Length: 158
Ligand SMILES: [Ca+2]
Ligand SMILES: [Ca+2]
Image (cartoon, helix red, strand yellow):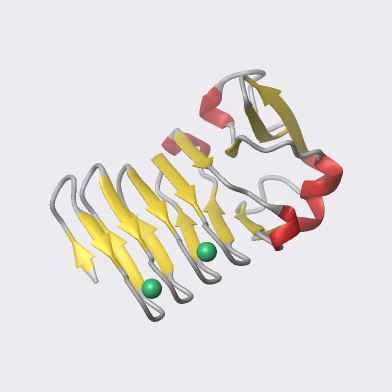
């Protein structure tokens, strides 16, 4: 299912769906099933029930909520695209995962977590200029994570 217009809403409903949006401000709902969600422009993505994969790509604002199930947040971090990626419900106890595609820019030992105004900001040292959001990899909203809890849930790929 693909939509091109602005402010679109896509509903996957039951079953395993692939939802893809191009318009700015799209809202994607996976519904039940193991869904894959991808947005090419600023969007809000809800995995809903099932173990979903939410693809955070191409810079811009991506707000992702996995919902129930063991969800995977797949992040391609390209700092020059000025990404503003946020995960609303990262839950290590539900075995949520973050898969980071780094193009070899950093390794797990470079990752740090910093609480900022109710969010945990995941960034990579040496790939970051102090507090600038522009080089934040992802913001984890409303969680109470430590790096020790988070790191086992992160998979780094080239
Ligand atoms: Ca679905
Ligand atoms: Ca889910």
